[in-house]
Image 1 (cartoon, rainbow, N blue to C red):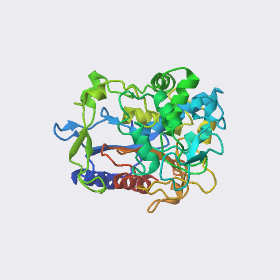
Image 2: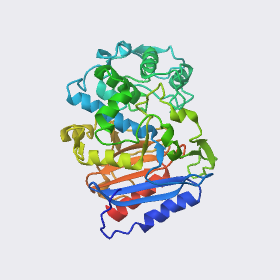
Image 3: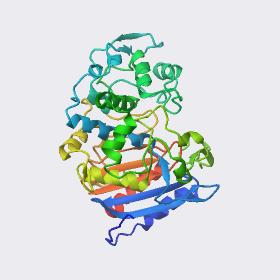
Image 4: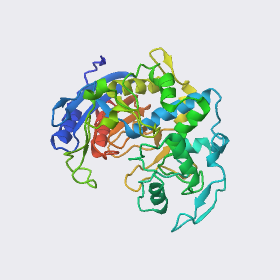
Length: 402
């Protein structure tokens, strides 16, 4: 069981705000944790993990982690870096020839064949910081590049049962980049490319490497790319809002549930960018490992200096995180983490220096070294990345504990 430190802090305001989002139907449910150091200050559960059955929401509930997977993949890659498996400035083509001699879309291109040669190779540090030049197929769905991704079966939401990390990289290598490597930040399949790089260097399948290197040492027994049959009753339901474009629209439409048999089978596409299922306790352990400089409960995953390197900005001067649909001002990117350079509205000065990332259905993780607090909030609304509920959770966590 998770132990909580009694510091006489009153989290009532945070709990009531999370209850409001659930009671209004804006999010279906939410689990939250606030830590000081690696001690839990507050843990709370709001709502039911499935509305129809009133399945209890608790520490056993299994979530689809989506892009929270990216942090795990990045940590895994850096274990190989520590072993000397690659250098951050190594060209990707050194290990994956399909990414040699890349073409780049010309500015204002109207067709996928309007290209020019890449001025430099893709570097491994660029796939870890989303500055390599790839796209994601949904960021700008009507753009030339994302339309081409879709035509080639590169769909991050429905990659297709036949796709593998290897075949995905072969398809990506045959398409142009959307900008010159190292010149711009764009969310992309880059972390899936990183997962394939882990396979190439380690000689192991991606899921096997994660189990051996991270999950088994940390005893993260409920984290995998599928939900075993005997655990399916713990899988939460994911919901769609009535209006996809309105972040405050009620989410009453089940999108995925334990009845979907695909959840119980290991997929062929072991997505390093979005593939994991997990629980609040498992990711609490993972978060504590990061808080403690790469070690927890006798298991050392990374060295402290390696984590510090990951939390440094690896974007070029003047380049930062940007989305057409989400706003992250004053944010750059390290090796797997977004880096907050200034506090958001309503946050204390100690929020500067925070590092974070999350999943599109609302699984968010942030670490604040200056305030010495960490926050975890997890729901299953598609979409709920950078949703008002998680921003309110963070603001109130800082107010109460920061």
